[in-house]
Length: 108
Image (cartoon, rainbow, N blue to C red; front, side, top):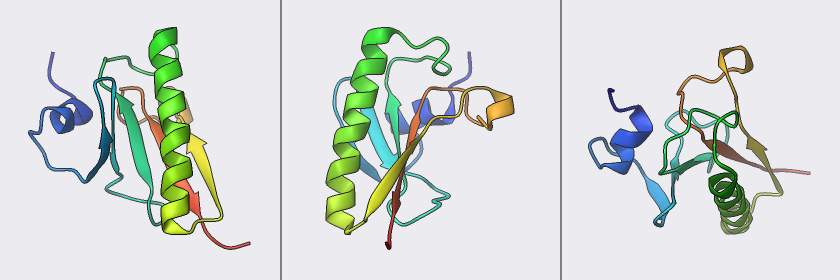
């Protein structure tokens, strides 16, 4: 099986601006950000999307995404953030590996 883009980032085969990493997840800036500070949180254990991620990995992923979202929005002086997960082609999923977009928002 050919490595997906995110596995290549995990393996340091392609560059990324990594903002967090531990044994279970990696977080890095999106290369096509919707807003300043837009980043992705990706589990290191492969799953295609929320249809097949194991419950323990999902818990770790979601808790890490929330923690990083809180820290990054504070650091960037954002006033809010959105967590977004696309599941399947019809929902806009383009890279078929589970990941959460964390998108900071600014203003009122």
